Image (cartoon, rainbow, N blue to C red; front, side, top):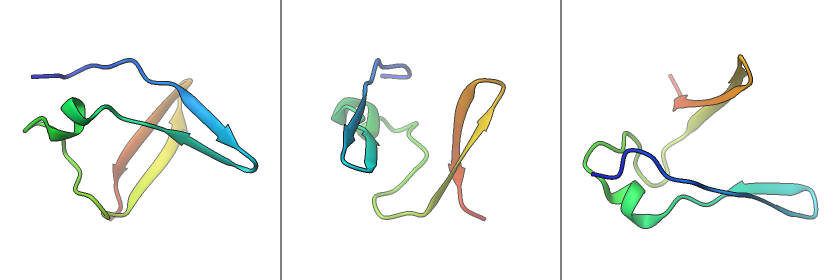
Length: 53
């Protein structure tokens, strides 16, 4: 199980991305599917990503 990983934020022109390692995404505990719409918000200096309702 890979419940925690270190990632970097990348910038290309006006877009920013965070790449997640494949071991992390393929973990059975990973809660999202490819193509699924998500919501990101900032709360107490943390980025929270959730499934869109």
